[in-house]
Amino acid sequence: MKIPALATALALVASLVLTVAPAQAFGESTATTNTAYIGDGCTYHEVAYTVDLPAEVKIWSMAVQAIHPNGTSGDTVVVGNLQASPLTGRTAIQICGVTEPVGIWTLQPRVSFWQDANGETIYNTVGAPSTFEVVAGATTSLKLKAKTERDRVTARVRLIADTGSTSRPLVEQQVRLQKKVGKKWKNFKRLTTSGTGTAQVKFKVKKKTRIRARYAGSGEVVVGGSSVALPAAMSKVVRVG
Image (spheres, rainbow, N blue to C red):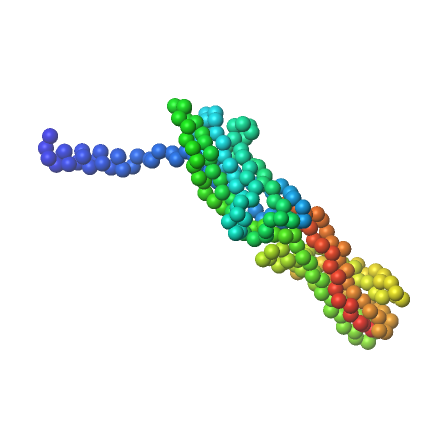
């Protein structure tokens, strides 16, 4: 073979070697979840997981550990063939609002062991960590502003919820206007908040009437989603008329 031809052949072989795909890295795993809204008790929070193993694998086990913001350990859940778990699925960790902290938590998956086609067992393959926020429910605030022009009052309310680091208007929530009659507060107007969390109404009252706005609250604590219990709220008293 001539030298140029030999060089060409070697270059072709080298290019083929360089383009060969690397072997699949079995044992890699992930675990992810969304914001957890917690109350005073303990509840289970859904976690989605994946583990990359051969489809024909028979024996495997993976642990998903929750880690607190300060690095201490929370709940650990185990999935695997003994639990009849699929390689991609959902499980749940327990979070207790009384004893565990709010803040940014970490999920750490770890394939404890799995057995390949040759019967060799591979141990302790650490997966990719992920983070999520644990929020202690929500707080609500209700503001009332009112002005009187001649014999008519214009009242405007604004309803806001705070969940951890997020503040948002509460949409399509009912708010009651109340007025003081003797020693009691009585409902006299019902409002529904708009897309900005506000509502406005006009009405007539006697002079020097005291009014306030009241929100009764809504829902129950829902863990693992965008819903959260909204506690009741009361505005300051405003004198009108």
